[in-house]
Image 1 (cartoon, rainbow over the protein chains, first blue to last red):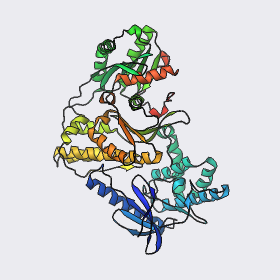
Image 2: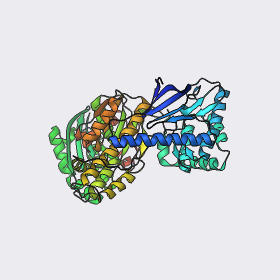
Image 3: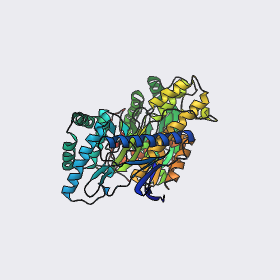
Image 4: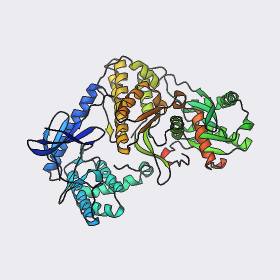
Length: 202
Length: 326
């Protein structure tokens, strides 16, 4: 398996490779020399296992996420998907709106499966020729917390325009859980802390 | 211009004098917390009793008289109400008596800007760690030039967390440097680790560490508390560093005096070829010079306030402050 580095994040390096001839990407959580070895190994292995579980659960509930091919102690191998992320891909206005509509309905599926994404921005929406996937569940959690769901919505809201959010919100809101989360979004926006503090987007 | 700054937000009463960005004097007096922690009314009384003596000391070190001072700055907040009041009142009295312009200064901005000026950084990522606050910040231009909070503690500041632990472990004086001393030669035991993106929480960790005191060697708990909480700060800062792609990292605030935190943060930053600067300890600890420095910038940029408009604000957030200078 030849490895080719394609991206580097704060906690992991992403490589392109293949698994038994299937195009794959590896996300390997790197060791951090500043923290105690026991703590370092625990953080990396627990997060790797948790992310793999979350991906499988999302996939089983019908969400469009990369399929997990293999998991090792600190690395997840998933299928390599064709496309570019929504923040980078050049799209016509109608194509972009269609992608955001899909991002909304995908988030509803993910939330209904008892998962929150934790970093739901346009940088983590992968747009192919005819399909849209949600990627990078590194900050994901198995939870049905309304607050966490609302934060997913809020993060996306801060990374797109008003008109785009309308389309996203409509696609997301088609369910009881969605309506509850949107009510919470409005509440969070009224809190002092978040008025003063704008969420950063990648 | 020659500006005098008064800091009284917590245990320290500090008065500093600067002239054109140069510190002429930086005098202080500290409330001794012992094993009991800080009692607000007692600290405020001590500040009130000593403000005149510290003022005299600062003027004499600078070789100036009050008549030669051209502006007054004081800490508006965040901080402890009764303590802040003393500084505000002293500043108003001086301003009124000598007809001086006044600048109400944000305490966190004082810590950060004194370090940024000393480092010569233009656009750093900042890890600000003190008693009441723990924040990751960067300058942003919109809707006005200010420090944007990218990540922060969801509950208590790391300094207060270490102080609370010091009280539980019966350390004297009950604060962070005593925890650092106790931690020497300790070994690692597992404690809860909570980071959410660029935010973090400390209360769960504090409770768990308190419980461990009954069953483990105190030095092991102290060591692990430091290792765990500092690793949390490093992870959140590293994420912010990659997201913002900054090449300068500033560490400031009371907890920036920690050798171990410095060491860990520098290990992390070296991986990303990022320059790190930590302020001198006299500026990491609360002090009047940092307030004078920011006050001078404010006064030079027409950001003075009329004395009757000058107040205190215990929860004065740094991201609401406009920075009108480079």
